[in-house]
Amino acid sequence: MNMSHAAVLGAGTIGASWAALFLASGRSVAVYEPDEGAEPRVRAYIARAWETMTQLGLTGRGDPGAITFHQSAARAVEGAGFVQENVPERVAIKHATFAEIEPELEAGAIVASSASGLTLGQMQEGWRDPAPLILGHPFNPPHLIPLVEVMGNDRTGAGVIAAAEAFYADLGKVTIRVKKEVPGHVANRLQAAVWREAIHLVQEGVASVGDVDRAMTAGPGLRWAAMGPTALFGLGAGDGGLAAFCEHFSDTFNGWWDDLGTPHLTPEVARMLEKGLQDETGGASVEARATERDAMIVALLRALGGAT
Ligand SMILES: NC(=O)c1ccc[n+]([C@@H]2O[C@H](COP(=O)([O-])OP(=O)(O)OC[C@H]3O[C@@H](n4cnc5c(N)ncnc54)[C@H](O)[C@@H]3O)[C@@H](O)[C@H]2O)c1
Image (cartoon, rainbow, N blue to C red; front, side, top):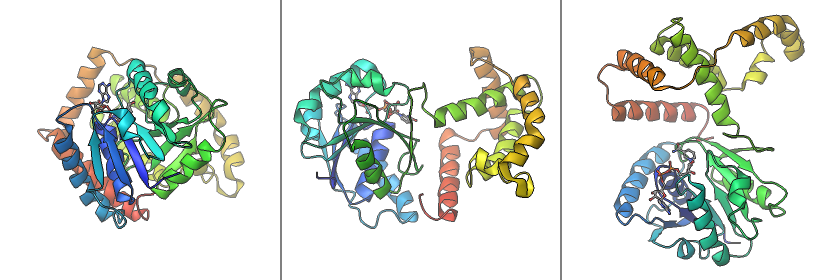
């Protein structure tokens, strides 16, 4: 199987970023993108991403020009050993794309879907035989954030998950296996749980939007870039490890959990958050803040020893 040539289906926010990373890894990339005006946009995105990836030492093997653009998904997957699907998150569009590519896939090719909300089972319904299909869910932007959530099930071909994990590892990604279908997979559920309580704290007047965000970035967020919550709490009660921590703090955590809020993201709540963010950031544009975020992520990744 030719893993040195990949296809990217749909080159919007996520697909353009995947294309940049595949190119940086020394692969050639065929892009399917029905929007006729997309090519200059995608090339400009790749040029910007290239600078960032170069700072991280990721582009040594790559050629940003090794890319072709196609108006047909069937043509784009020709000769590709790995296909990353990033078309819009609507099941009819996913199914139509899968139906178009299935007869054209190389034997043994892997198709990974970036889908955030649709489940693997829903997407498998668009196939005659979904053996090549897995979930390969990235975190935006995939050329910078290491995580990919990988999932297969009993309809997935033997060895497909392991081969996909090896492909992602070669790109410098960190993969986790999702073993059961749940809305939002794993990482988005973790984000949703934390954001729910952040909103609750603001709603209750406990702290401002800016201070709740700061409580995260200057506190747990910094530790969580180093270790996950369970590993960290395993260090929170001395030599007794996690067992001692659980024994000491079970009443405390159970009490906090009983007190956590369950807000809903209504238009009123959205306005409250928007005002709080405006108070915090003043007139800074979204673009300026995104640039600041990306610079910090690059600095963190470099401190942690590369992109992964
Ligand atoms: N945006 C994120 O933060 C994020 C993160 C992880 C995963 N995802 C997933 O990645 C996938 C793509 O999301 P996105 O944010 O890049 O979307 P997007 O709207 O930015 O990009 C989708 C691209 O697909 C193209 N496309 C291909 N076939 C099409 C068709 N038949 N009809 C219309 N457009 C078509 C569009 O022109 C567009 O360029 C989704 O499944 C989404 O859930 C998104």
